[in-house]
Image 1: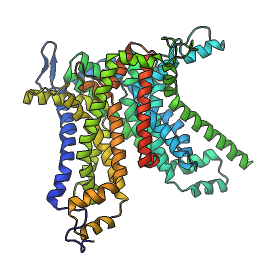
Image 2 (image 1 turned 120 degrees about the vertical axis):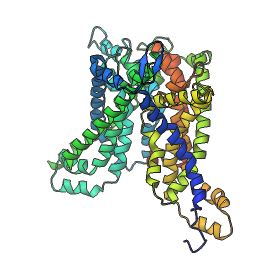
Image 3 (image 1 turned 90 degrees about the vertical axis):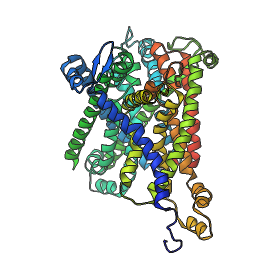
Image 4 (image 1 turned 180 degrees about the horizontal axis):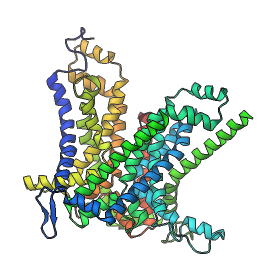
Length: 290
Length: 271
């Protein structure tokens, strides 16, 4: 190919190449990496009410977080909700991903669109949908009372259950699409082989499908876990003001209390906790199936 | 006996799969339903149906300016994002060089950094830049567009590199051997061939930017909120058919973007 022209086609000289690559790379590096570094530096500063941020080099903000039961409670609640959501996303997402991956239907594209659309519609709009269902006069309570199953409305809004249901619905599309792409790469014949050797469907799934789909399961679990840990709109709208999780805590510390050093520290604790738990779950899943 | 087991397995599989799909769509169905209620209070069963709430949107200043801000920001961010990301994708897909994989990861990074962390980081960065330069950045349209451009870049890189990977270079070689220079070859041969990837990247970037909430929360200024933030603030106060009607319009806008994307690139292959 290089013999046709002096330079391989589509591969301009080093200068042009740099000119094409550098702007985007610089934009992301300066626009995202530098800000994250500044945020970390902020988290080591001190905060004095009235003077806001004071230059310092201290871990006081991190100590404050880990020595206060209130903040530890918020972190624990966030982790608990995120783990529950991730487990349910995997359990419910896998069958749909499998059907989607194996279907020969000419409506497959329509199915994919039905899963992608909610993904892009935004979390606030989807939380609004659940608010219609969960309210004291909402769909669920009206149906239960109409059927005579309960005499008074049951509390769903502003509970942990509401938040978990909301986040599961938000994260399911991510899980399904990740799993689907991996399952599509698994040869159907290995499933048939397991069946012809007498494996019941669950055994086939556990012993053949899951181990082969492991990379996709890992990717899906990590993605949904990160999203659940960092959820904002869903806990704010479905959990109410008293239901504190890490995402809303970061925002209120920054925007309402103007405590940037502590807000920075909370951001980094959230990021680190997410990272540690992601690595831990990766190891557990690997050991279970590998 | 064994066939029974497989049949039961299939029934269970499809049952769970369809229930899950219904569960994913359920909030959109509820919010659409509410938008057509006759009464203002979201109580069931509805007292009747009405279209009046779609008219009520126009009376709400936050929704109107929010829509216009979101639209401006998403269009500007998509254009800038494409100008930055398409050339970079061209290099990443075509050239092997030291650190190429790392650069690819860097450009995809905004996709994996959580929204709240991106928001706080860019917020403090804009404050520092404001102090250093004296320019009003935080809360400005420019500052918002810069943040949103970060959301567009990874989608464009992902979709354009994917469409370049499947491209035969023979046409480009032919163009060059016939005397076309690099630029002519790019605009007349390469760009038309990767158009599906560019269009899909642009639409995904646009939709991501338009729907972004977590990062924008930190970057908006007084009097300049985006539509998702307007919806969030309204919902923190109350839920009624007006906010549901706005939600329906957003769902429709995004559905149209999806259908257009699907005409260029089969969604099943790119997400």
